[in-house]
Length: 54
Image (spheres, rainbow, N blue to C red):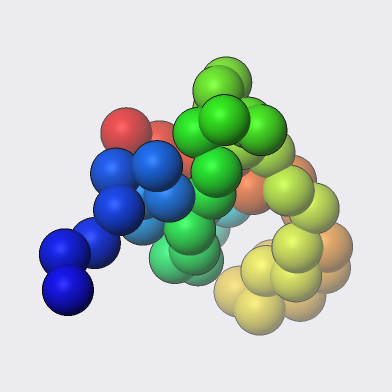
């Protein structure tokens, strides 16, 4: 079964500058812009914004 292009895999990179990333899927229909989530960065040891990179 082929992967849907409606829910692509995206990488979320930390805005703290540590280089830490998360990998997730997103809905293009609900989030057409770049995704920004507040998640835990274990390198910085705090919650920071993670921004989608392409």
